[in-house]
Image (cartoon, rainbow, N blue to C red; front, side, top):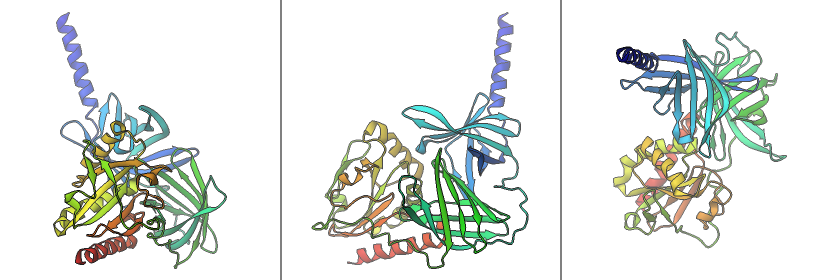
Amino acid sequence: MKKTVSTFLAVCSFFVAFTQTNLPKSTWRAALQRGAYELPFGLEINPKANGKYEVFVLNGSERLAMDEAYMEGDSLHIPMLIFDSDLVAKVSGNQLTGSWKKNRNGTWVSVLPFKAQKGDVYWFSKTPAKTAKNVTGKFAAYFQRPDRKDSSFAVGILDQKGTKLAGTFLTPTGDYRYLAGDVIGDSLFMSCYDGSHAFLFRAAILPNGNIQGGMWSGISGYQPFAAYRDAKAELPPPTALTYLKPGFETLDFAFPDTKGNIVSLKDDRYKGKVVVLQLSGSWCPNCMDETRFMVPWYKKNAKRGVEIVGLMFERSPEMNVSGPKIDFMAKRFGVPYPLLLAGTNDANAGKSLPALNKVAGYPTTIFIDKKGRVREIHTGFSGPGTGKYYDQFIEDFNALITKLLSE
């Protein structure tokens, strides 16, 4: 009897081990279900030696690494822990079926249905018919805000090749990252998923070349929008939104890192140096994009006499809640400079830095000269998905640092 039980358990263990490492290297067409509409993106799944999986989300040209995935029973878990987010799906042959889950107050809840089919990745149509429409160019876009009667302004940058479409929308506080999709007939469709945001655009292309439609975001967000061709469309200067109040030239703060060490600009480490303050948050994808730029830049340029300090504005003011998220971000991106818990990302954010008129958005980058004076405050970040705008940011960033170092 004991031998029979042992044999049975061994067979069960083998079966479980087999099912938990049975996904081959593969690509998948994935989609979240937002009401009646699909929000598609791609997945690339690569098995690892330890029975875990390396997973990348594909948004057009973006290949975004998720955290290490794993099997639990018959379900694959694809986490993005920094965003308290998880794709959980039952594996059934060439199909994944499950949900996108978010952690809310310590409890995982399903927010949107999720499915994926192994094979070629495509967005809204596998073989879209040729179209006479072409939306390549720059647009002045207006999104109707659900909580107000006015509209928020953005600059749309679209690039169409055949029926394939890529682009983004730039706003005064950041961009919508990598959007990808198709032009089908007289309509356009674009989407993006990054573990935090889920965007879906569906719009009609009007005879005059303008665009009118809607944006679905996250679990329940919706905004109608209209976009007009405008080669001269520009955002307001990013240096005009946040500024020092009259009578102030410097910033004074003392915030803790996750180990409880208090860091201040008065510390010897920062005396006589150019300092860049990165107002950020572990919940913010645009902040992640800026951090991907900042980390290698700092490693290359710190010896020139430059320091960076990350001021983290989190959802909770409690270190036991926000500290692990900050540490996870630091580990994920290999951040070599201090990350401090400065406050919460709500209407009270400005109280942490009372010399500022407000914190208008994340990230916000503050440049401080060798004498401790604030020289420029830049709201938002044009990430790599914005093309030439990202290149222009890097050029302006380097020019300003060089100028401050030469003084």
